[in-house]
Amino acid sequence: MRIFRFNTHLVQRIDKFDSHNAFVNPVLSTNGFVQVGCFFVQPSGLIGLHPAVANRLFIVVQGKGWVRSDASAPVFVEMGDAIYWEEGEWHEVGSDDGMMAFVVEGKTVNPGKFSLVAQE
Image (cartoon, rainbow, N blue to C red; front, side, top):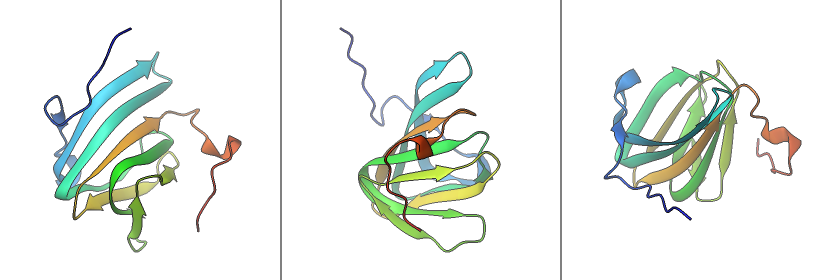
């Protein structure tokens, strides 16, 4: 058994796309097909508008915040929500109070195959 820590002490700052107060801790990569990261959006944090480099599932595991695609209005999200963006889809993430999420991304990521309930 090995224990891994995912906290704000072992992270990489996200500063592209005018992002601020946002960090990522890479978790794993599988021969380039799928990768997983633990993202921290601190209070008043933002991961600026950018295109998804691959299909991306953003799974909120702590806190709350908002997400949006391209020109859409922000949508409130909280622990237990999962947001899916397809490759090339422009998106942005922010939080007033702080939020932690695991992100699974890759060309083969397709949450529609499972029993996630989609909200429109």
